Structure formats: C-alpha cells, structure tokens
Amino acid sequence: MIEIIAGERCIACDKCIDVCPTRVFDRGADGIPVIARHDSCQTCFQCEAYCPTDALFVAPTLEPLPEGAPLRDLTHVLDADLLGSYRRSLGWGRGRTLGARKAIQPEMP
Image 1: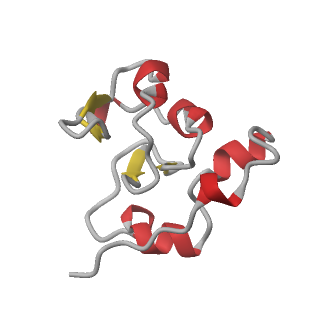
Image 2: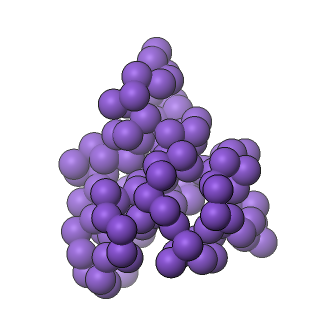
C-alpha cells in the first residue's frame, strides 16, 4: 500500500493522481498529493513507478501498516534507499541526475 509521500521531493506534477486506478490521492492545498483513500490502494505500484522525482513509497503489503512501522518512517525508507526502488527495479528513469533524487532530511520533532 502507498505509505509515504515525501513532499520535499514532490514537484506537484499530478502523475500519481492521474495513474492511480482507484483514485487514492487528492491534490493538497499546496499542490502536493495527499493520501485521501488509503484503504482503496491496490498496491499496484503505478504511482511509485511514474513518479519523476522518487517522492513516493509503496510498501509491498495489501493492508495499511500500523503507526510506527519502519516502512511508514521516512527516515528508515531514506536510509534503506527505498524511495523509487520499484521504478529502479523496472529499469525506468535510467540516467536521472542527482538533482532529481536529491537527499531530503525529515523535520525533527
């Protein structure tokens, strides 16, 4: 299921909104997509595959993960280099520059 949208990477292109077959996302007030219908996610990975900036992470699960799960934690997902991992496994986006995959740091509480 879709678990993370890294807003710092998102360029508000709406590709994830457009490709999602079950309309999981809504456009946020700032243009960044939000997960509006989490339970509707079919874990098809289309949003992650089409994201041009690797701003999405889809966990390979059919149910939403519980709060505190490592795959819902942006720091863990970044450290494990999981943002865009599905797209990379498909071989899409070869030759992307580091600018498109810029490192982000989550805000500390």
